[in-house]
View (cartoon, rainbow, N blue to C red):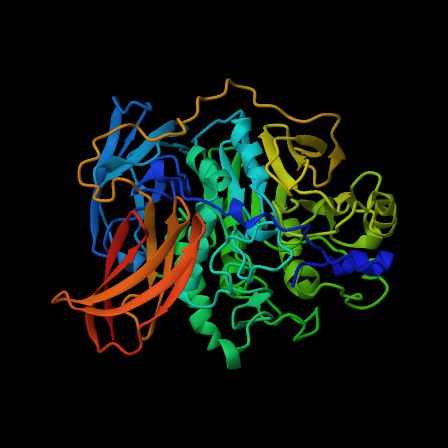
Length: 623
């Protein structure tokens, strides 16, 4: 189910279930960019420190065996000033994803990087390390909720074109687990069914990362990411999810592990604890200007929504371990701004919380449903005089800016006195909210909840957080449409907080980068030798065959450049044909096909998928 903003709907009596407009023609299905072979999914980087950064790619080879290659990082796009380099081996254990934690780098420096395998170079990626010491300005884009079927990622394109941020903070719902709906704007994401198993999650990430908007954004900036619920299942908590039925979909722990493993493979994230993919909460330091605390309010310590009173100290979003880490980290921070990057709204959306004990909670998936833990955080911030706390939030597909009052009855809406910190909630990149503008109703929100300074319930886009010594400002940008690829956007509004205060003021204009923009990486790979690539034409690209080893079914993800009759043949290791499967005529683009090989005996086989003009093969093994 979509996020419905139950709190606001209670106020206005309007049940806004988002819907998508007419589906695109299937002839417009997504296509793999064959010029990027064998690095079809591009490159990415993330989790910058002053001296290190994680770089990422995925290699799609001709067979299912390991692929070896090299990587290099330089100060220029021609790679004449290489500062670090090395080798890698990609294999099926990590879905052929490659992650290198490059160390020995200089602070606050733009770098370029690339990978080479099977005789070709990847796209050139651009990334930036974090600064140390004094910093005059930092700028981050912050985004969330990018549901592929519900629209085009125009917000990603607009951030890429700005070329004025240090990094992109993705606050969760990077992918969605749902099946493709019949009314979706884009119906070409794979698998078409709801994803449950590891192979499903891997193929869903593969489909997303083939999107040119997402690929180009990753190419130009480092990402700092956390998951929310849809990287596993809707409204998840540590031991289950609203969108998971154990009787039909198996044990939750298996699905949770699958989602977390695929996330670890496909995102350029550095785990704070080696060998523990369940723990992703961590701190990123940007000199004396900012400490960024990326929190997990979803899977690590969250108890079941609504299972306890909202004032019960046993109801947790962060859990004890993460809460104690956060409190200690906040207390020890010497940075000007303390940024909490997390998933669900911290601010109160209940106008009756001072009248009814615990209030009338309208969305127990947010911090409103875990008020004791919120009070614990607020108490710690005030008792330790921690100033300049800024919360960045995603999740609810709408944009908000608000103060965070400790007590609504003592909060002064005119001056902001009584606020603990401020919160900026970004709208979604594409995920559904109100299908129509609700601007005339915003006044009801401001009257009932005076700590809320801005709300936008319809439009899609992104936020820019600009940090300077004396103030921090969030600028909200809306794209014109998500129904088609479009270059339009507009500045909606901006709000700022002044150093050593805890409340918001409305800005008169948007912020800008104070220094010259740094040149971006080229959009095409550097030309290199193509020897070693068997599939020269690239008319057929076999991206994956899952699972391998298999029990009875093998799920193939492949791309064809033009419509063709397709077939699959399976041979034993002596070359004897064991099975032939006619897939019929398939249109150009990306496809998923499941082949049943249950009648085969245990052992190794060669699977060959062929079009009218090309073929590719995989070695597969049956348990």
